[in-house]
Amino acid sequence: MSALRNEAANGRRPLGIMAALPQELGSLIEVMRAESGVHTVTHGGRDYHVGTAYGAPCVVTLARIGKVAAAATVSALIHAFDVEAVVFTGVAGGVGHDVRIGAVVVADSLMQHDLDASPLFPRFEVPLLGIARFAADSALAAQLAAAAGRFIAEEGAALVQRFAIETPQLHRGLIISGDQFVASAAAVATLRAALPDALAVEMEGAAIAQVCHEYGVPCAIVRTVSDTADAHAPASFTTFLTELAGTYSNGILTRFLQARG
Ligand code: ADE
Image (cartoon, rainbow, N blue to C red):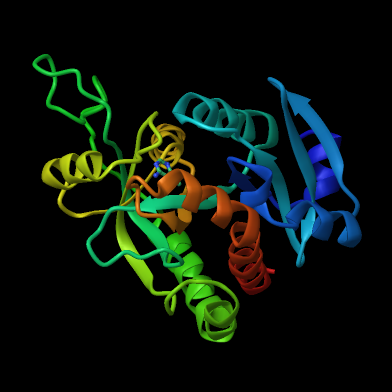
């Protein structure tokens, strides 16, 4: 392990924490800056911020949007920083019938809804890997869900009063990823018909889960529902991103990291 990594992690392997956009990450980098100071390293056009948050050594970075961006970023976390595990936080479109704006979804499994090498390989299956659904690490996902549950219990009522959302619910299950922003009722109906148990759709999670699977690195994904992937999605996404995404990520990550300490 390099001097840099040793210094930041104090002998412990760090946790990789990712989001696509800065609003989805919240104030984690500022927390690290105040707690330990931050050392920033740039690889492949992305900044990796090394420090400690709530006593936990972390490398925090922004992937930007899409599966390729996410895969490239998580590869660097694994290779250059030897992360022990990866956690991704951000927003998603709700596609499950009872998944509403403001809900939190913690992935049990993830798949790429736009991957189709049929008839050579079954639809959705990653060719030559023979897997369509990638499991999140069950212990890490349980810790993330527990943190999300505590956040909702402690701050959910105040959020309902301040913003136009219903009482937030916590869901566990399938998150699907693809290189499309889904924004029509017809597209949601197509996704539901193909993958009836999908709870939420986004653009990075399954790519991270695949890379982590291939390297044997545990990963977990938490998503707050910013829209329901219909015609209102662009406006709802933009408002939620500006007003609430950071609040959810801060509330969930703070509790998650404090519990790891
Ligand atoms: N992330 C948030 N909302 C989304 C949507 N509707 N489609 C894809 N990714 C999203």
